[in-house]
Image (cartoon, rainbow over all chains, first blue to last red; front, side, top):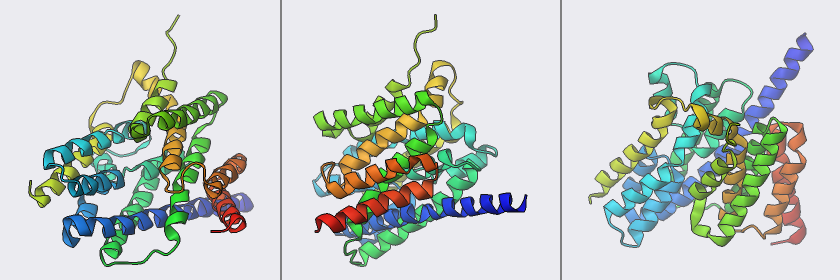
Length: 222
Length: 100
């Protein structure tokens, strides 16, 4: 009994350790964002944007569009389109989250692709995983932004950080594919997404999420 | 538009999208409920494709491909830590082999 408990604790510790590369990679991208944003919108708005938006896709787009002279309304339209990716992630998390409306609304702040994936794939409490992974990711994003604004030098960390995300999502796909049909659908969605991005690079995450949803549409009942 | 107003609006839009299906809207039922139930693995596979093509190195970069293959090789362990470690070790090994 004691050895089983020790093995379980050891496994939980190992799984918690998997947060480290993910959080570090988010921090590295925070540094890149801080450096890029401070030149366009100024140091303080760059930091505040990470504090109140906490979305790499939205923030990088916001800065890129402003740098190219887009209007505020155009920027907000793009932010709204990018935010659509949270809808399926939230719907996936909802049945797994414990607590009432206020608790779910609080945890929703930490919903990003990575934390949602870790919460869904975790064998334990999705609420706790979302909270812990989210808090560390948020901290890393904000601290990274501050360091970027201050001109921190990343060295070769950027290329290493970039590889964390594809590997993380491969791991999440594998861990959430619990039955054979899940595996088949994941393989089809991954291959179809690569094909879509090859012919239409602008399709981005939303286009690929639509592909994943299309793969999951049930057949007509007989 | 004032930059502060823009940031607050962007934050509000982003949070609204996070909270909508997590807490406010009713849980999906019927065919949509079935889609949501089946969605996790295909969704993360699709996001893996996006992350792979988004990386500056690109999909035809040997170390990045090695990382994905290394991760796939460790899938049977069903451990997030071991899959990530296998991917990163494969990336580092192939980067060292092919050089800068």
